Length: 110
Image 1 (spheres, helix red, strand yellow):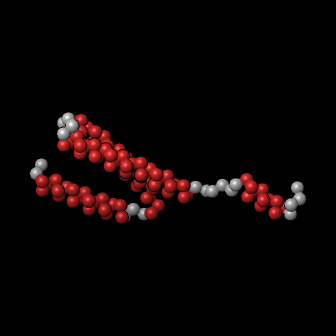
Image 2 (cartoon, helix red, strand yellow):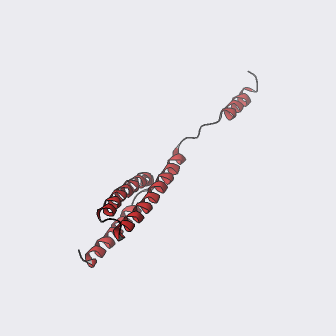
Image 3 (cartoon, rainbow, N blue to C red):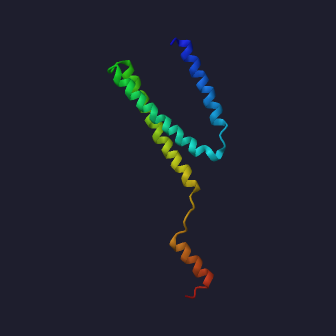
């Protein structure tokens, strides 16, 4: 493929990605994060295959860089997804707060 074909595919992918991400409702951001983590794992596999195919020349260094950057993206994405899911969990009352609330309700008589 010539350079113009590769560049036009890249630009079209950028536009499609932009419009797909910005049209997602806020309720679906967590599943979108999970999908991007899955895509990054595919990038890691592809980078390992590309890096191993030609030896450790320029493609090996580029493959190593892709593995490192995709790994950072995956681990960061999982951390952000975990924090987002934690915001939706119900917080449990601690035992001391529950005991104090029932004692105040009963007037301290047990």
